[in-house]
Length: 211
Image (cartoon, rainbow, N blue to C red; front, side, top):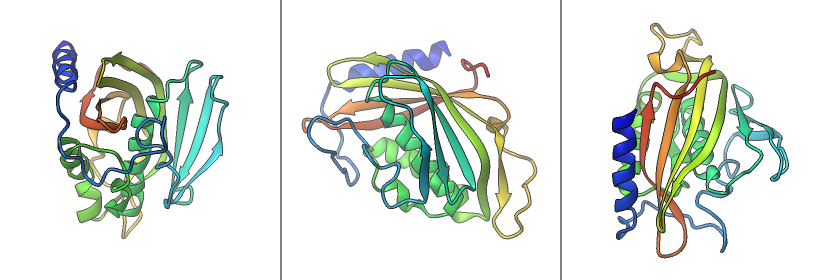
């Protein structure tokens, strides 16, 4: 954990420099953070409940016609930057439910994160695998903010989700070990000269998140 934190701080400092050439960036309206509205635009996801912006609560998003349900546990003090990581998570799970990586193309990612994103879902786009069940995001927090760098963390609990064979519908064996217990997902973001926050790198840690 300490090693990952040190790496994160170094990369945040680097985020104050010049941004890499982004992959098909989709800037939101003026004054918004990165990746706005990508969680619902042209994608099989339905928000069934959304807490108000100034109150804690659980937002439930159904992906792929309800094949995967994602419960987002929002804190009382909600920073717009939190949407950077929640929008990424929803887009990546749309890929895992559908088998199509087109949902990643609307995200605001820099080149390194683009490579990580596509590598992370390759098994679901190239192999006979899909995901279904229930996932939960909680412990959302903006851990660090510099002039042009930010670190956004969330805990992910996928213990009620399963990876299945797309052809048979049966659970694959063995299941991915990372789904057995909650894990920490971290996004290192960089703010470009256009004011849009783009994810520069993803980091994960099996520790740091209790149920």
